[in-house]
Length: 422
Image (cartoon, helix red, strand yellow):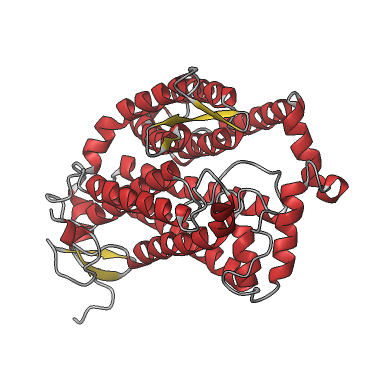
């Protein structure tokens, strides 16, 4: 299979035709809504990273006072992510399933290495990065993808045991506890929340007993309350979130300036490049609070476009998952659902933080915020999602996803009789 067949020749004839959502499409075609929503988010993010980082780059010695510093680095990260995604697209989903446990093991190793002095790098009191010369690798970002693949493989193998607390739930719970313990040592509470949502969301969608899942939700809620209450800086963030104006120059500083940015933007914004809050008022404007700059410069209209693009992407991920499950490709379907959960949950948390409806957390906006590891992990996830969609459209012998029953094959290969001329 060539890259040409996989990346964007919409409408070109491929290896056969499938029926998806009542519309016959060529086998080599990819989902255009998924492709273009992802591409627009990546390009929009590139523009806004540049706009939000100019003042900081010009005023910082770390960037050599170069206005284009973050634009150039983000462009390089984006190109690297696209190249890595193009390579990942060539890997059959069946091979990804075999690699899933190994990738999870490598992810755990990365989380351990980042905590070792002189290997992990500490920034602002958090040890989350491993210096790699040109860039810093953040293992927690890559672990999100590894957990999505591992949880999907685990659930696909345990489908007959999904009602069992001991055989279905406990092993995955132990894995997530181990990952959580390492993440909280960094600390990276936001990544722990996202990874937990991915893993247990896949288990639930795979058929985990509803009572077990309800018990898990109660335990998770109690655990998160304890983690917040027993940690002074997390308590401070929570109280600052509930009333940021009470300590606008302290614990509520980031949120208060984010809200000012939203207020200044009104309906159509002050114009691209016209943000005042990015001029050393709003910390991390090109990473965690990119949406606030979008709101100030492009207004409610710009924020609505971003939300709509993310909604389309997540909806297409679950549509692709549903199709894979119909073909009895359960690992592929669970991976697609895991990626949809990942992007949906993380973007929701980041937007909630920027708008003041959730406590401040160090989570970037997927596909858009500055950060090499995040962009790389997002591009790999999108490539896998596109690969699943591509394989969904292939005739049974060409898909590489494994065998399924002849009745399902007949339903895929043959058009519906409804609406056909007699």
